[in-house]
Every structure is written in C-alpha cells, then in structure tokens.
Amino acid sequence: MADNLEWHDKVIFDLENSDLSYAELARKYGRSRDTIIKLARLHNVLRRVPIAKGARRAVDMKELSPQHKALGTRLTIFRENRNYSEAAAIIGVSRHVLKYMELGCYDFTLTQLNRISELLGASFVEMTTGFRMSTPRGGPTVRHD
Image 1 (cartoon, rainbow, N blue to C red):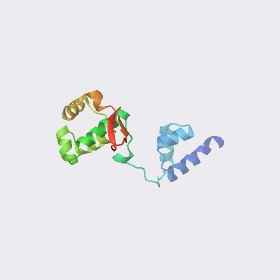
Image 2: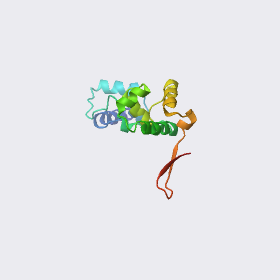
Image 3: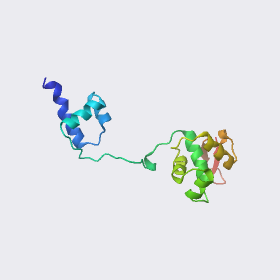
Image 4: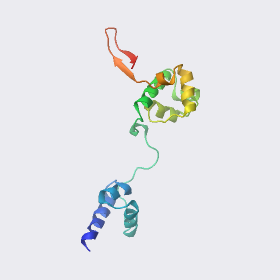
C-alpha cells in the first residue's frame, strides 16, 4: 500500500517547487487534474513558485498561420505613417487587437477581413498570400508568392 502512495510526496514536492500547472502534473503522474487539486488541498500545499496569471504578453503569443502572418505584415505596412490608435480607429478595432493582428495571433472576423480588404484595396487571396524577399541587383524588393 505504501508503494501506491509514493507519488503523493513527489507531487507535493513538484507543487511546492515547480511552476507546473495542475494539468501538467496530472499528465506527469498519470492522474486526473482533480486528484492533484484534492491532494494539494488535503496537504495544504503552498505554491512557492508564482503561477503566471492575467493577460498574455504579445511577444509570447504564436502566430496562428502563415496567412494570418501575411495579413499582419500588410497591416503593418498600412500603419507605416500612423500610430496604433489612428490605424485601429480606421480599421474599427482597438489598438491592442491591431497589435495582435499584426503579429498574426488574432483570428479575424469576416467583417474585419472585409473592412481590411477595402482599406488595402486587395482581394482576400492577395491579402493572405505570403511575402518572399529577394535581393536582385537593384536592392531588396518584396514580391508576392
């Protein structure tokens, strides 16, 4: 019976000394998330390592797809001589959403895509086509793939 409970001490140690979430610990020890939470409550475990909460930082977010990134690049070019607030007002979103759009981390709605295509004067296919950089004799240029 004692052998079956050895994982308790390991889980408690990990809860106190690592930043693993309950779900990650559950996967690590082959238990359910609820079991890990109950164990932590039973033993009054105090998490010594702070768990990151709140909004995610933009730099930590990953792009959704190459098409999202391509559209984000075009929005960055569109915003070239404007600040975020001005460009966001023109598009009809907040400046935070515009930043996520430019990073390729935002899933656009059809209304937003229609508005952006009108502003950029491009079709949906053109907007989501990636860029390919090449450096011919005349210097760097940007071409559509």
